[in-house]
Image: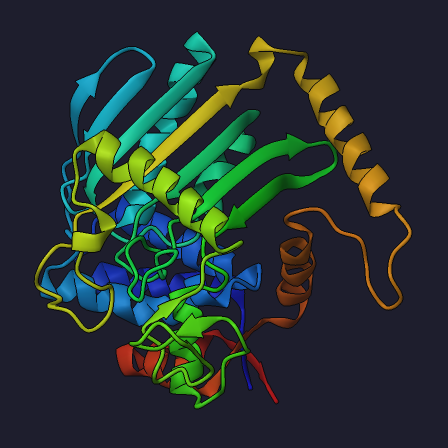
Amino acid sequence: MIYLGAEKLKSVMSDILKEIRVEPESASHLVDSVVEASLKGIDTHGLSLFPHYVEGFIKGRINRHPVFRIVKDNGSAKLIDADGAIGHHSGIFAMDFCIDMASRNGSGIVAVRNSSHFGAASYFTEYAARHDMIGFAFTNTNSLVKAHGAVEPFFGTNPICFSCPIEGEEPLCLDMATSIISWNYVRNHKETNQLLGDGLAYDENGQFTTDAKKAKCVRPIGDYKGFGLGMMVEVMCSVLSGSDFGHDLMPMFGSDMSKKRGISHCFHAVDIRKFTNIKKFRERMQQLAAIIRSMRPLEGQEVMIPGDPEKHAMKQRLENGIPVADNIWKNLLGVSETFKDAVVREE
């Protein structure tokens, strides 16, 4: 197993993106988001996707020099055209507007169209939380989740993400797909020839399969409830922004990398100060967290709040390095041999 250092990794990735002429802000947000996801143990949205993003920049799927355009502006709501930008950049661009509008009006919401995959949604909501805001982020994706009662998928994994500040630690963060697993989880199992767990994915006939190579779509969380939440996200993203439904989007993988996908997002920030004293809010959040964490655990388990597993993973990986599976390491070296400069240890 290869272990990579976060800061060395950022330097290597930044140099690669500079070499292919990705504008600095897009590159900065992409690198920060990818490394943060890997540090948190969210490997499906971390380093494993970097070769895909590089290919997207080179072949034209992702705009290396986007010009964002405000299509509608109504004081506390905006619609932005991202000009095919990397979603990590368009998301922060949008959230900055949300924060600014919320600081003046109490709440700000931005819908984004004509974007691309934005990685881990927590990158945007925690950004809002660090500005003492409650942050929300949503995105649609291509059809990957089986529709309730149907053989085929309709909505994507359409995540819901929520963050808020908490005293004495990094923000609380709930970041969940409306599917029981991500599609990248299926892809990773396919590449490593591992079986999926029972009840996670379906074959082309809408029947459960543990064979990642036969999986055509994944299961929604809570069955019809997850299907309904996926539809809510679709409304907030594609319907609100006037974009294509996820059902009509090209797949992230295995499709023409010279064509833009037209992903849509939605971001929302709420100014806590408009409701209560920010210090009091932070302290009450810490009180709430402490009560939950101190509950009597099942044998061999720890009672945690959303985001705790990621905080534990980050502490360990900052100390020991980010572990990289052999197949992902091979793909990274296929982009550039300079990734070897980020190795901090091998096992």
